[in-house]
Length: 299
Image (cartoon, rainbow, N blue to C red; front, side, top):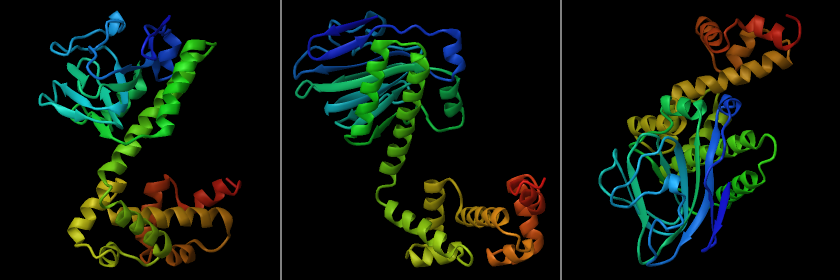
């Protein structure tokens, strides 16, 4: 099931995937790590034959793979990125099934890489919903001990292969993929993250009265630019985000008090009664009165 090689490298050549494993949502084909020293041939001759490729010809897989480089630097190419993209220490990059790709370390540095190969309907859903794209396969997240620990956990789990190991590996993959998304997004917003976090704090403190225009003024940003960046950062326009915070606070108040609904709505910043009832029903799928009865156990 596995081969332990020189250069402190482990290759899990194949992990069996049963029908129930894919029903879990994610299942793992391979996991491991390898070190390639400066000037050494890449891929090494002991690379698993199932995954063997040449730098010139590249390869196409029938699974996803998530790779993490913790030492050295190199180059990545794919069908969607035909021009070489630099890979450096702290880079995570995702390989897609059916997508031609090639990658290799620089001869002067070599590198150390971790990888995990997987497939499953959960990853397909994330792809369909736009969380990942073949045109953006790489994130420079820096050296992260939590990412390395997850790869090591996956290696240990795959070596032991106890009952249910595929389900545990599926959980590790989900965690790794979520960290790629999380750290990648925050790296992309590094220049404006402090301003956006300040905006979220201002909303939390002043949600009853604050407006999107107030936010942009307090952050000393032009409104159009602020609105665009805020929506990219949070996934919601400022007005929508403020409304969701108000509705969340009203839900909490409905559950934990018996105060009149109209009074709560006005206190939380909804001055138009009809608008409040429409917005609440759209968000909660029921009226405020029904929500109170349900959450207070009176429905």
